[in-house]
Amino acid sequence: MKLVAGLGNPGQEYVYTRHNMGWVAVDFLSRRRSMGRPVSKFRGEFWLERGLALLKPLTYMNLSGASVREAFDFYKLEPSDVLVVYDDMALSYGRLRLRGKGSAGGHNGLISVISHLGTLEVPRLRIGIGNTASDNKIGWVLGHLTKAEMTLLPDVLENTADAIEAWLSLDLERAMTKVNAKTRAGDESS
Image (cartoon, rainbow, N blue to C red):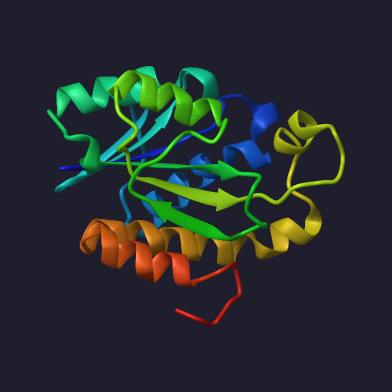
């Protein structure tokens, strides 16, 4: 069993904000795989098909780990069976980075997941949301996608779903090589 947890915040005011890219990616993957409507489980929205579970914690970003831990314990998973998908300001918009372990880099959702699972060795897929020169980082992260970003969003989501599928079907090193070679939405390199 593999678990893909997309991080975000519940509430209409957070729809299509940069901080909800993990949620948008999981919604897209569930539609692409024709997984139907989610059920309420593990303090989140949850989909299940043979060997794959998708989870959108409804606990708010900073408490995402509690939801992930419930699914983790229920299915008796190892940390390597979990992929956390979330936004990252350090990457340009649409750029993806897959890693098998590491620090949270200041991302409160990942801090919560790492804390609840008790290890830094949790695979993660970061979706670049870019950065502004502004000192208002919170405003940027919680801001809605611009028209230009929305135009690129379908490509970002296709690339993100492809990256998740690579993680599901390949060993981690091969998946990282494949995913990290693509720099951002619209790039032709693979």
